[in-house]
Length: 86
Image 1 (cartoon, rainbow, N blue to C red):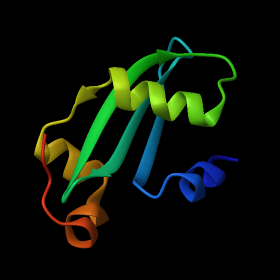
Image 2 (image 1 turned 90 degrees about the vertical axis):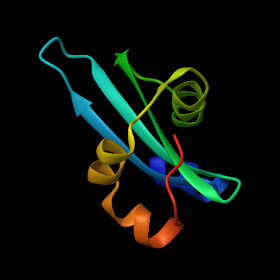
Image 3 (image 1 turned 30 degrees about the vertical axis):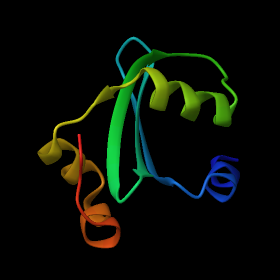
């Protein structure tokens, strides 16, 4: 389950998954790094992917979200985890 990934990785804050018309998925992830939190997104996923591999791929290869988009997707992160850094 995806919740196991949250337990294994204390820096993981949140995950957002959206399905596209072409039956692929866009994954957005919020995570802590140093004293800030960051968010990245990556699209084009399909099929069954191991949760930890999926999260690692988004963090390594994903595009950073601008602060207004990140805050709107992960609304609790600003109050719970401090300043956002792109």
